[in-house]
Length: 247
Image (cartoon, rainbow, N blue to C red):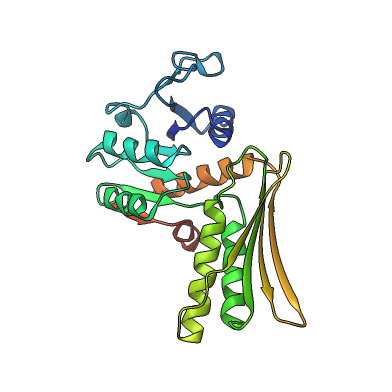
């Protein structure tokens, strides 16, 4: 499987490149970086592929693209691809509501799988939190996150996803709009990722914790999602990580 990486010089993008190069069943088709990057023209690990910015013609030479960049760059990439049906796996987070709607519009042209967290087991963790919210809708929910000190202080895409899904689960059971769970943000050292969902029940509290040990977890999960996306011809549309696990 030939894979192009968007955001190839980033924290997760670097791990993606490393995993692809180390796997004989995978081939790095392109290592895409932002325009103006100092890496442009530099060979990737001394091989024949060089870091370069995205362009409209690169997509015909890969089976799938994995995008861990920024919202503006991610949407610009979708525009570059145009009407081509190249499958996309997107781990970029921070899209506004309007940007997310644009992303869904692009999925009319090609299959796009989007997730805020590709690490193994996260989907099961999220489902456990949703199930608890359904069974105990009166419990006050709160979301917590801890990431490395260089990450921006806004809540991560993972926390926003958890808050939304837990709120929706409680609201459906109660029959009215539940309050949005508060999100507590912490930045500590080189922490890769710790996510918590807390349910306060007065005399008792339930805490669900998910901890990612290495960045490779995000990269490996994204590659697994990409393999699912191209394992059979998928129609154009927007897919979630849950779709890949339900087959």
